[in-house]
Length: 264
Image 1 (spheres, helix red, strand yellow):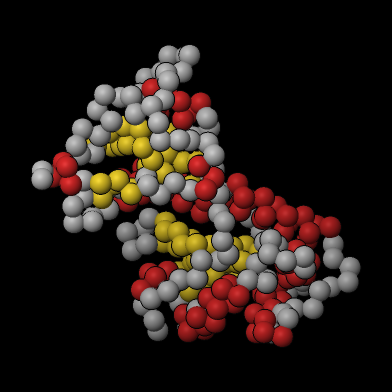
Image 2 (cartoon, rainbow, N blue to C red):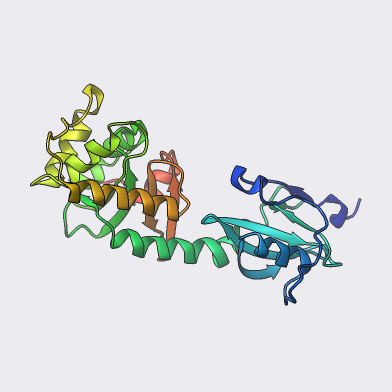
């Protein structure tokens, strides 16, 4: 069997994309386009095409996003068909991750970093800490609390400052809790009370939460949705090469030091 015959496509289509796209031959759109017909058809359906890249076996790769999530498209040599997913070789090596990171994820993460920097966040750690991490945090998220506990050695050593972008999405009292923290006279102390008392219910909700505090939390909710993030915690951090990395969900294993740096 040839190398070409051994190449395979693992289709990793997200649930949001399944209803929008199918793995079929696409009819050419009515308007002329420089893109192959399948790619132009997907653009018509709302997919954002960011650029193309070389791929083996006569395929041409395209980096795209749908609802803020990166996705790869592979167009066949005749330009008439396309598949969405991850391309692997005969050893199982992922041939999609690097070009997708370079064209799609990297710029998207940098844009998200800038937007989170301008959002409402609560600092956890020394203001002069050399490493900054952004975390989208729901007060009722057990994995957010687990990461808070995990990060204590780095934060207490003054090595890391975590900026918590407070959202309220998990439970009915998530917005009131988040707004209580954001609207507190000392938000940093309120966040610490929330996390240290998480097992017993967290922070006590303020009776008269200001509209301004609620609005800030709702704005953070809207930003999270606009960025296409679906989990808490969602963490953005700087890699060793200066690029922005993204982790959705509780970091495990080596991911912890990738995000926080060497353990003090």
